[in-house]
Image (tube, rainbow, N blue to C red):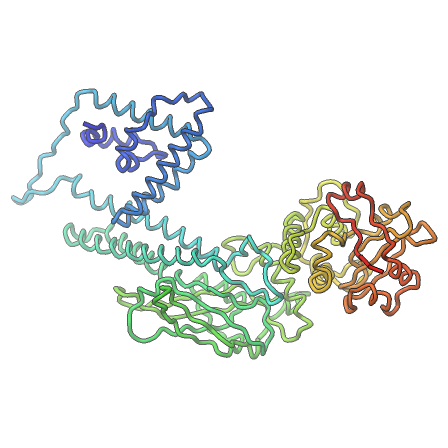
Length: 609
């Protein structure tokens, strides 16, 4: 007889002490044959060479658990096995610990089963009014099982809620700054939504089963107080599940100009469970930041702060894809009501959101539920000149907002290391290049935004929102973000290929520039982004008759060819001469390339006679 077949003879207390949390009795039960077939005693726990074999056993065990969970018809057991499988991943870093745990358990089992077993104490059924009553342990069994199931459903709900928060609120870490200037966000992984749909339907079924069990227990054992508490908990979880299943599948543009058309789509993950009958109409309205905060306290906004055109859509079910979506087409904001601004706050710093609302009835539920979901924050502008500053507000929000924040709170200051990640990510996504900003580039940007020479470790120096896009740079009439956005626009439109090939240094201060070009042969040059003009590039070169570098700033508005550069209005004669003889220009030597961590110095112009 296998050991696993004798285990039921052990007392409950003995079984609870035998199996640790990292290896629960469920694993022993479902994988009994496989566990007893393995040669656990052959392992030398001090031999590191046997670790790969232990890891293979762990992988096999997790795979078998997944298979058992997949074929288990009981939804609660299936979810429980999935939790156990995830918890056992702690052995991934120490697979030999799994071997030790299983081996010790098997040894204890053999030791316990080798001893004479006492017959379990049989409680004599009590009689009340001549009627035999079930033992206390049996009467409590259903309640204990229900408590365990409620705990499981709460854990599942928290996980699905966190997943939906990530889909609808967070900045999508893989592409925190992705998008065009309108910054349209869409959910990139449809399989994630499909998984969420499956989980929501499973949770709805589990909740329904648990509520039925509570009703049956109440019928058989009376309406005790803890049964009422269970019912309230299940009803609250049901309401949370139904209301949390609305997700914004396609976010509206995060910078919206009044009178401009845009679109958005919303998906309901429990669409197949909606009660048939009258079509469900989804309504959209624009709300302020304060109204978005009050939603978390159950306050439904009543004040209309903007006139939204084409603000209704019908939830339509697609049988083929099993999706239920409402698509808002040709939406536009006709007018917007601004809130009172504080201090120097501008209209481009004011954040709104779209609130989507519907009344949905789920099959099996007596009354309908009000379901709401808000979009990512948006900035509403009335003129194209406001777009740059509005985009700065959105970028700061997307890059630095915290998970589960109060809408739409962002930090006033962030470490420079986070700013580096945001700037490099934005640059790469907008220019569509795989070449990001290196250490030299970021050091130059740090000196510009902090307005001082920086050395040592400055990753933790705080950068404020004011330094980013409120205060103008010293001696200039534009902010750091306005200048950086001009660099992005220039590179994207005219210099993408040159930047991607490493032909443009781009970000370099004048002091560093002087050090690099001094004592270099005549004709040596490099390209850097202009400090004094938004969207300009500067050619710094060593003149033909003197060992001093000169620069020429050229505007983004010109065509970037050698011939056109020579005809730029206001270009100095020396610069024109330099461009005309650019085929004779020399790049910096390979030793300089190596010292700057890459091939960032090459000939830009390649002219053929």
